[in-house]
Each structure stands twice: as structure tokens, then as C-alpha cells.
Amino acid sequence: MTKLTGPKKIDTAVFISGTGTNLSSLIKFSLKKRSPIIIKVVVSNKSKAKGLNFAKKHKIKVNIFKFNLKDDQKILNFLSKNQIKLICLAGFMKILSKKFIKKFEGKILNIHPSLLPKYKGLNTHERVQKKNEKFSGCTVHLVNSKLKSEKIILKKKVKIFKKDTSKKLAKRILKQEHIIYPKAILKLLSSL
Ligand code: GRF
Image (cartoon, rainbow, N blue to C red):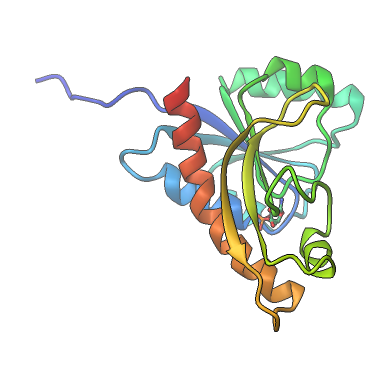
């Protein structure tokens, strides 16, 4: 009796620079039977990124690159050697070159801690509070090479309370990031 295996899982790379809590939640998601992805490699620009511990714990290949322009081809070669078809940026703090993005156009996702297109850039929690916004949130979007606004895949609104410190707001939003990232992957892959 031939073993019935489901559809081939999509070989995925996750890029991180820091704590890696989104990486951890993506690993958990990838290990679910029905998950459409398998995380083959974790890439970082920081050899000491705490999040790399999650990759090591799950015996996922790790590779560190400086992500300066001359690294592009090396990184692309590494990704193609591992048949990577989907890239998830998760707390990744380097800007990818246009050349790199073009190679993976439509297949690079990123999670951003605001309700895009509002509050692009850094320090989003402090900025929304300074503007007395009632809501903030998080957004998963496609990374594209053109300057036009990047295609939003999924976002989640989070209410801001008067007594919120930016740390407390960040913590509440981060929890929602872990929920919407896997959902955004399912939504993207079902639309391909
Ligand atoms: C998260 O707020 C994410 O939105 C931003 O980086 C922060 C840290 O994420 N891009 P992680 O814990 O490293 O996944």
C-alpha cells in the first residue's frame, strides 16, 4: 500500500535579526500536519540573534550573512541550493536589495507592527501613542522592489488603552503577530 502523503510542503526560509518570537510561532505552525510549509533554513544578519536558538532547537539549518550588496549572489545561491520558494521576514532589520527582491517577487512576506500603510518604519508603538491613536495593530505584507505600497495580505487591529506603556502595547501586538502570520501564509498560498 503506497503511503498517502499530502501535497509537497513549500520549502521556506525565515529571516531574523532579533528575539525570533515570530520564528518560533512559524516553526510551531510548520510542524502542524496540515501546514503547507516546511522551514528548511533560518537566515540572519546577526550571528548572536537570540532567535537562532529556536532554529537550533528544531535542528533547522542556520546561515549568517552580512547582507551587504556583494552578499546578494551568495545568499541567492544558498537559497536556491535549498530549493527555497517562500521567504518570511520576521523581525528582520536589513533592507533587501531590488535585485534580491526581484528574484523572489511575490514570495517575500514581512510582518510589521502597525496598521499599514500607516506608520511605516521603526518605533511604531511610541509613534501611534504620541498621535493619540485609538488603535494600532500588525500587518503581514508582500515585500516588493517598486516603491509603490506593498500588497497587504492580512492585518489585525489592536485597541490602545490610555494606561498602555509602549512596552505593554508592543507585547499585546506581538501576540497578534504570532496569530496572523501563519494565517497570512495560508491566505497567500491559497491565492497562488
Ligand atoms: C516584532 O514586533 C515584529 O513586528 C518586528 O520585529 C519585532 C520582533 O519580532 N518586525 P521577533 O520577536 O524577533 O519575531
